[in-house]
Image (cartoon, rainbow, N blue to C red; front, side, top):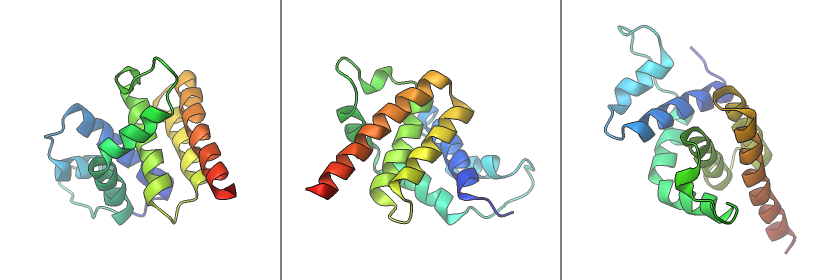
Length: 143
């Protein structure tokens, strides 16, 4: 079974959302659950899936601090819907730590995840937060 990068991101979202709810969950069992419907089958975990899940978990405090700086006054990470927070963490991770993924692709993929796993208001919120980081990146590149 070969997965596209988009499908891998969907599974990474599912993994990270589940781990956000239960940090002590068996990661190997979760990988298998998101990769196959057959409980008797063990499938290889794609490298990029492991990169996303491990990277987001390892850099979570840093990612949360980055997200926090783009929130409007009065907003806190605790107020963000968990689905939106997981999507933002993944996008910020790809923007900052995966050179092979262009920033615009990371943003577009985050918006697709929001379309599939959240609602239109969340999609607009995620777009707004990520647009600010791309604006800052563009300004840094011009400096």
